[in-house]
Length: 602
Image (cartoon, rainbow, N blue to C red; front, side, top):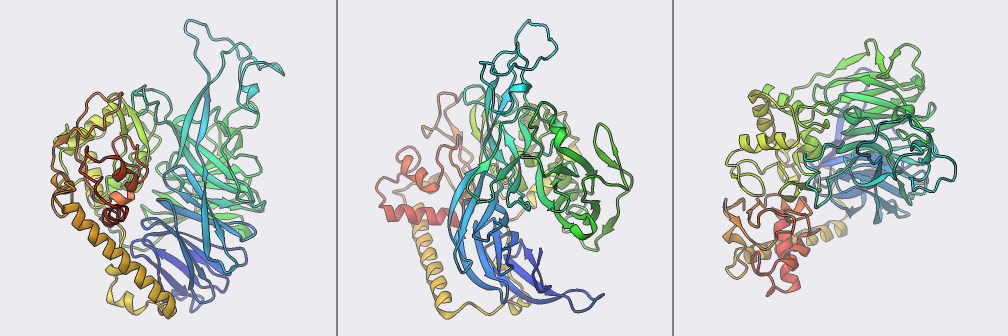
């Protein structure tokens, strides 16, 4: 939620596709609803431009950035974005918006027109590298000696001093940006983006998905410059292992103190970093990552939001799983708390406000939710990964992992567990229990009890996609704001009608004998025929050539495609698979667009 300049409060109803506008009616009175504003499905990020004239909304399920005039909540414009946009902030000059994406390793820099409407987007990469010390077999460890100035060996810029002078050349490992759920703008205008840097393994090694015993996920913080032109992701030389913030979900700046606060889902912690550092969390000189960490604070289950009260030097953290607010110090050196060494954790009790609310989850599913996001331990994976590390919110991370059998893209879980057996890309596990057991074995996890496993299954089976305008109640429809001007409404209706007609045409093509799509993707849900097929998709690293037919439910929101993620879009897939998976060469360009529109509607 966000407070507008005149005191009105706007809350995003992510499961309704709405913004709710509330207004205070008295000092001790509850907020009163003024209206509901429709927006693209699953609004999750809210921000205002510095002049408070424009409200920016990032929607995840229907990926878009929408802008509204704060004076009357009039829609100014909407721009489609890459998949899974989450957090949004406006630049200090108000000329652009920066949008984080949960998957894909990108930040979108969106230009805002003179009227506040988003006009164009370009993507900034948050992918990075890690420099590892190469092990020397048979050599006894010696005390590290710093490299002399001007040493000839290659080292990452600024990190030469971290390498012993007699060490072999460092190893450069590519890492992919992920878990982009949070952004925070500093007083300088720079934007901090807590992320995870993931090593999915080299294609030929089979090491990413559990076979290699290297730290797979490293917590990091990228920085976008004040002009919004580039994202700086410096090389990683040291990290915290399982103690890092693997699932960052919120961030906020205490501007007077220059403290960056990051909420860590799964570890139930908030970490305070020195925001004056060039890269918080990254050492600029020999030493540990902890050199930039000020302190940590334990909070309730599932921290997903932070708000800073600069006047009182405090922050309020919302923990979604247990419905609590925790009050933290938002200063560089908390005077009323003791910081324990070496954990840097604040000791003593922190004020907690329990919110009166009714949970939608029963006891079993609530336990499954906590277990699914539990990070930092070794029960799921040897390196502290959680289920949510690869399946954020039960979806997918858009990564292709190296496995002993070959490259494997992460599948979406939400909506794809019921009625889709057997499981796995090879379809070699007839039930979820067997598939889950193999997953934990691959990841080197210590394991869960049968009850804990079933709790995770119950949580996943209950997942549903976020609702939209078609799911509104009569009361919600009565509270909707007046429709946009006739011209804009007419244009929107025409576009929606054209899209629906295109999807209907695509559905007919999908079920036509000539295309052959529905011979493997069966029924109303287009799930799977339960069989394995050789569609000539095997790579030279694959141990087998035939793969099980995947479900197509929500396929438009799970790019990239194929078991190895080779096709970035559905259109690219349709253009590349003729004769090996259905028949599409006879289709015109318009027919292929129609088929894509239908698949995206599933």
